[in-house]
Image (cartoon, rainbow, N blue to C red; front, side):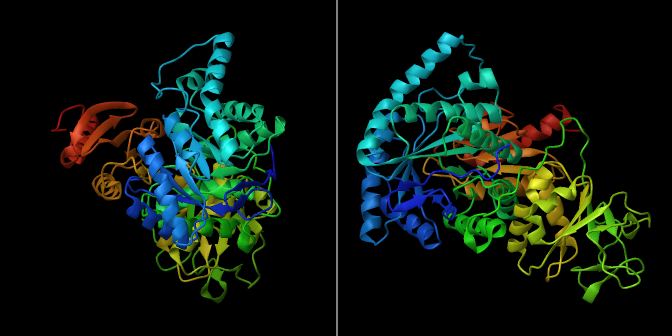
Amino acid sequence: MISGYKSDIIQIGSLALGGDLPVRVQSMTNTDTLDTAASVSQCIRIIEAGGELVRLTAQGVREAENLLHIKNELRRAGFDTPVCADIHFNPAAAEVAARIVEKVRINPGNYADKRASFIKQELTDSEWMAELERTRERLLPLIKICTEYGTAVRIGVNHGSLSDRIMTRYGNTPEGMAVSAIEFLKIFRGEGFNRIVVSMKSSDTLTMVMANRLLVRMMAEEGMFYPVHLGITEAGEGEDGRIISAAGTGTLLAEGIGDTIRVSLSEPPEAEIPVALAIIRAVAGDAGRVSNPVPPLEQRKAGERYWPQVYTAAGKDSVPGSTADKFIGDATKVSLHGNTPDKFIDEAGKDYPSRTTPDKFIDEAGMPAERETLTLRPDELRATAGNRAYDRLLNPVFSCDDPEQLAIESAALLGRFFIARHPAGLCISNTGAIQGEPLRRLAFSILQATEARITRTRYISCPTCGRTKFNLQEAVKRVKAATSHLTGMKIAVMGCVVNGPGEMAGSDYGYVGAAEGKVHIYRGTEAVLKNVPEADALDKMLELIRNDQTGGNQDK
């Protein structure tokens, strides 16, 4: 695997990106792009929060044309922040926007191809090459415009919107994502255009991490070193959205992959910026970029049983029946130095070493835990010394009084261990004010975010954009309130059908915006109820779930 990938530096308007420069942060508006005042106001809030690039959807030519008014208003207000147009399905809109904004984002899955139908499209090698030539011809006008106007391009691959052609040959896989990007990169490079950023995004943490690792390896083999944009798409909201974003992006930033990030939360877009900055700070400190990248951890082999246990430090609330699987000691076995878990000491008052003997860790029945323990501080978690976590109880010790900061820092630093399926268990210790049950919940949340262990409902929800025709943030809250009891289920709440059906392909059910005031209800990838009035949509989805669970018999 590639470790310490270093990109070339490119210019996006006034913003330099890549190389050894700090990792840049960005967000995207959720306003109607035809509403100039609302879009400008939201752009300014993003910028004032620390955003270094703002993106707006341009689903049609009218929206693309209005980007000129938005950009001019931002410049008149004294902001030189680059503006990016987000394009799906509409090359004409991209070609208009490229004459106006500093960057255009296109999706290889739908720029030259129709929306994926998830129907196999078997092609011979000659037919495959003919499709690539068709794609090249479709891209040439955009490349010429971007060359003339100095416009940068993001080639943004989404796991949820790969073409039927790619999925037939490679499946809906990290390899398919990387190949899709490389095809477009070769076309742009063949025309002498290199002002490019590339991204591999997924709502699945492991897929996103694997796709980016594969991408940088394939780029290096081709002599390409384009900057990489990172993000978990459709991350959700609240603590869960922060944890899943931190776990995925933190893993790659630690490995030296990533030049810019976006945290995709179902919240006001300006709320994404502090989270992105906190992730970067957790992994790289104030420098804004990791100076000594760690190599990727060896992945546990597929098929090996992996069910990490959750432990908790001794305390008054450490009682049988809590959410933890096992407990670390009690006052008779383990005392805590200064009544805080910054140091574990034995009965003789000696500090525990990094690898303790298992008899210091007992379950609620008083029996020793089965694994050796590795106690690491945040600076040790950032270093390669953390590779020793394989099949051991990982006991990170943080010092934090703020719950959000602790959630982001712990997920950003611990994510790579559980993505690789290394530790046998997790006990989060903290010398700050946060103790007991919140630490146990946090441990389970990190395992959930990395899909190492699913213990509750996982929600996939998009951050919304100008394509969304209903209040998605409120919809997410209603769906969560009504379904949070469904343990282990995956439910998607999506603003539109651009990436929705694909990104929610692994979901059990989906609530997807279809048109103004209309919602499609999905079971898996199938829209079983279409154009349901929004007022009835949640009830209809709950009815579908109940019927599926009872075999259609409501009396069961």
